[in-house]
Image (cartoon, protein in one colour):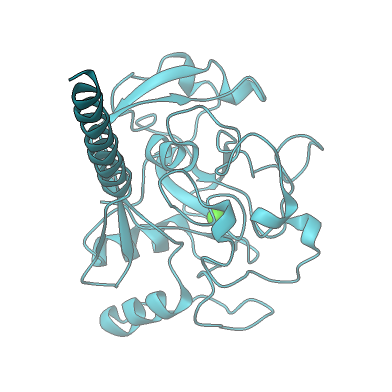
Length: 266
Ligand SMILES: [Ca+2]
């Protein structure tokens, strides 16, 4: 009798373990649900509504560390490529920017685009640029990590200055450096324009829900560093690889020297 009960209990335990494993797999899959944006073919990752930790104690403009709630949104898995930007130019009569020194390689990210160029592309594609907060959540996830892949810098997880590169790399070349949501090249390859106007003291009084940046100002935010940037503030120049690192350029943006591109958001 006792043995039968024991067997039944073991069977129940096995069934519970199997079903919870299935649920866990489903939860992980839904965490990075994707869809294709029909206009430009961008793979869009859904970032579920919820809170994340924004900012860091690293640089003055990243303080204070604060909790931000964002509604659900979609963000490009990869930076917008040259092939995609060409399609936009052909469809709209928009002019391609000057080619970088490595020429136009279709799978590489578009560069030498101003903020206005990036915003025009996103509008054509049926989306918009990500807000600074959306960009940071997609990079850092919800566990407050320093880099998209974790807390320790790793030269081999993104296109960065320590690899002695001479150009951008094809988008998605560093899958080991993907963020918790599966976004690629959030650190390195090209800096990415965000929708927000930049203000160094914005976090001191920013809204805790869906912040959209100051209403006016002469600079626009860019995030993530480039193939020509280091790990972020440690050396003090060309910072950018850290998820919380903030940088900016003049609006509408002068020639961006082959290091600035963008990704699409909805
Ligand atoms: Ca990037």
